[in-house]
Image 1 (tube, rainbow, N blue to C red):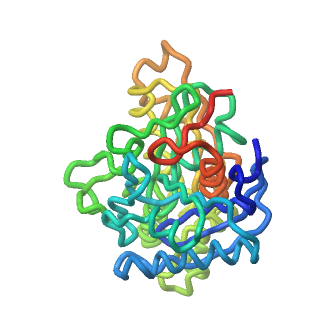
Image 2 (image 1 turned 180 degrees about the vertical axis):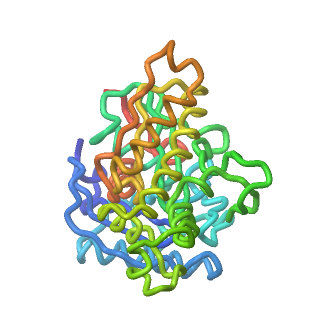
Length: 332
């Protein structure tokens, strides 16, 4: 496949924009990221133009003065079926803004817009942990939970372009409040936010190295701190990962029961914890999956591309013919 959009010279840039950061990078046809730029996400309670400014700045910095052939944007939110608008984003201010057209006008090149988990799935199917699987589920654990469904090697976008919003399935009626406005959503029990919340609560029950890491202020605890503490064998951190992992496996079991995939791929920042997260998830998946004793329980594996998966998949989508949200991933 050509590196450039036909007839247009320049580089292809992928952008992953989530609840805390904007990460942009030039992506080569083999999935290699050659230069990146990072910006802090302005937040939910700001003008949408501020988020767009951060995105454009990151793209131009990553391009290092080179012309743009195309830009793919992986957005943490509901992208419409035409791939034009972010209809709603729990952690960002977008509510129906025509983001694709706005960015095309500002960047002067073709822009492809899709949900961040869909983009991560494209990357993992093309270059990573989902390669060779005809049917796979992708779950990304970051600030919340994103998700994607790959059927026959193609992303299922759904009638509204919003398939795969697994994080907002209700798992606990009248449960924890969620940024989406509802309560009891899965991501409130299995995500980066849930990990930090659980660690803070568990610190009140037993000593932890997290107390020193956060300077005695639990509000300063971050996900990377919990991961580092777990690496040191800290019981509070390991209990927090066990809880988040267990909830991950329970939710995955429900999705596997519905879709019967060959593989379940776990990505996002929280997945950097590896088996501390995945082992309890695998145990919960096998324990709670209906008919587990009569079927092959799908492998639950870590994504290969790490935090770059969203932007790599977005860039890959930008190289493909547009078909509604994102682009169709060709079956090998």
